Length: 542
Image (tube, rainbow, N blue to C red):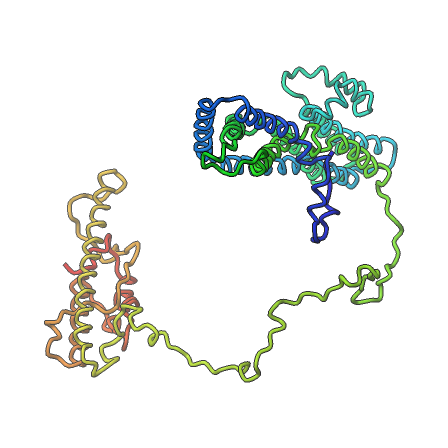
């Protein structure tokens, strides 16, 4: 029952849509002519009463009432309410069409996966295809009045061949108070599993794929049932309907032409623009009324009866008559051609176009502007001098820089503070861990201080600190660069000897020529490898 006019609008030409206005079937005139007759009858009845049946005093009252109705009709947000409602209805209408089940994908899977050219193989394939048609028929019967009129009862489906007597008996015996339209889907699954056990389906993967496409088909039927069950909220439909009818009831009185002597508009007997407004708004509402349930018998409702006929015929053709059959393999006419060209007829040769290679491919660039330009390398330090906050690797890196000694002294001071904080934290954590283990019984160590031996000083980990030890400004103040280096080495050696009362080899305490502040000190590594202690705090200066 769908009205198709795609061919009439295939080309945009003069009065292309105007020709569609002359159609009656599926037109707005067919939907709206009754309401239009009622509206015009009420309007002209009030106009006749005002002009010929009222005295002067009554006309004054009538005119006051007409002005009042005209003034307050603008308070109804008709366009907003109606437009939003129709957009929801149209979107829902298209989604319902997308939910109509089509068995092509499922029956092609049946033909590919269920093997066997014997009679039992044919029976299994045809039965699976028939279950799909029965599933859609039961769903359409529950949601569509057109299908319900075609198949009022299960007896009609049995007589039509969609259901056998045995299947009808089993269907009636199922003790379910809800809808049983899903039963053929369960029969489909059971029969597919049986075909797998008989070896007609090669492996479990093919069975899984077959069941997946069947579940998609069943999901479409479920969506149709859900759309029939869950409608657009009734309150919204009532609001839109009341807004439309209230507006035009007020318009019947408010748009009356009053006497020109009262400084009103020109006296016209036919309200042309009021009728057009009624036509547009009421027609808009009629569009929503027709599309809100596309499973009825309106001109633009879905033709589900045709879908049943088509699906049953196509399903049997695919799973039976065309099963494992295809034309003989031959060479195509373009066998020796690298770029085959399909021919054009005389009526279509003017439609031939060149392939699109990209909009920028036709751009011409001046040869002088197409030469490459040598690019200079931009150093990262030159690009952003303040990107890193690390100081120079050595005070001698930039001898003669005016502010360098102060910067280096400031860095050493902060480095010393950070080391002191970290050493104190490690000392506290080590002592607390030992005491906690002794309290909980996880350690046999006594709480009383004990004398550690040199052989037991094996730390579990070594906390690596920057190789450059903190040097205060007072120790290096007034010394040149070489004297500063010598003083730092002596101070470093003294700290390590005080921390561990062992003889440390001289070669273990060496400082690289320009060590990085983030590399571990060689002397510290050597000490960690050759000494052992319970906590790192014993390696730190007191």
